[in-house]
Amino acid sequence: NINKAYQALTDEVTRRNWIDHGNPDGPQATQFGIALPSWIVDKDNSVFVLGVYVAVFMVMLPLVVGTWWYRSIKYSADDILLRTTQMLFGILARNSLHNVKKLIMVLCSAFEFEESNNKELKSRKSDNVQLPLLMRECKQLAEKTPLYPFRYLYSIKARTLLHSYCNRSPSLNEDNWLDIGVITKKMPALVNEAINVCFQLIIISKRQRNVATPNLQTFENLMRINVMAVQALWDNQHPLFQLPHFTEDMLKYFMTKRSNVKTLLQFAQLSEKERKSRLRMLSEEEYDNMMRVLWSMPYIDMNVKSQVLDDENTMTISASSIVTVTCTLIRKCLRDVVDVIEEDTPDVAKDQEEEKEAKKKTWQKQPKKQKTTAKKKKPVPKKKTKKKKKKKK
Image 1 (cartoon, rainbow, N blue to C red):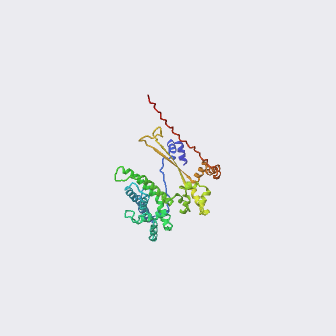
Image 2: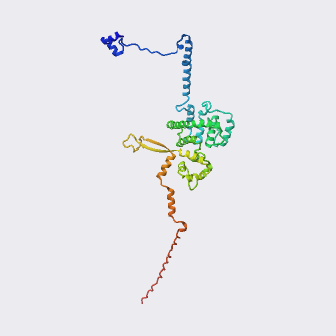
Image 3: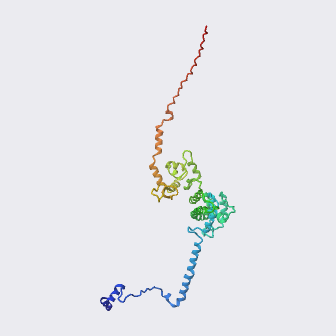
């Protein structure tokens, strides 16, 4: 070592090797080692190690990759079965307009609700007794339709459970609620896939005449089904049924001639005294629970801005110009919105009381003065006097 150090100081070649490679002898081969247990390196265990290697890399790894590949070719990017997408294409391309009940039949016929494709949905012996009871309560179920795929048993079951869920049937048991939870969780993804299919049908219909162009009402009905799956209500029911403990008997107190409450915002704008008087059949705990849900309800504020980005004057929209529409959605709680409205608007109740006080009471009002109308005298017609002509002599 001392000799190499001396050479590194005196010999130019050795010094250059030290500076460039960090070693007076020049570049050296780098060696790496892996710490392995001794039993793996042992010759007696070579057959066992080789068997484990073959099992992991030649059996298990191809099996895992094959299972993943087989599953991936069955599903789309949105985790929807390709068979379901083909079924949506075939049914939605027939007509331009589809109502809510027809779309429920279509979405409930998705192959995701079949037991072979979804292990969470199970066919039970109790379904033979429970489902006929629920089917009697449901209207417009169309369980006897012979059309494909509406006549399949899994489709009838999913359709019956969704109808009973929107009807809030008291006949639902625990097993039914488990199946309903699976159906409602999958429903937003199916609605999104149906909307994407409708967009593609619009493009295809321009090239093929036998393909119907989906109507705007079809898009709205699809979005309503998504809302129904969340709220457990039909699209034509009153919004107040979203609140807990609210029944049909209470609805008549909010649909009067004096004040007709149509939205949750109008219900929230009622005074505390008036609200409690109309909900006097509720206990204090139920009322607090209802109000807690009410104040947490979302209120969406949407701002829309249309502009042409390529032109100098972006706000002027001319023919054949590409318009960019920017929508800004701001989500607020109903409690914050009501507080802002109450601060901005004056106290209407006080103003009405002041106006009533200013007006005179009925017994204080003076009697109305009778209007005297002078009778017009009819003009007397003048008598005409005949002039006698004098005879000329």
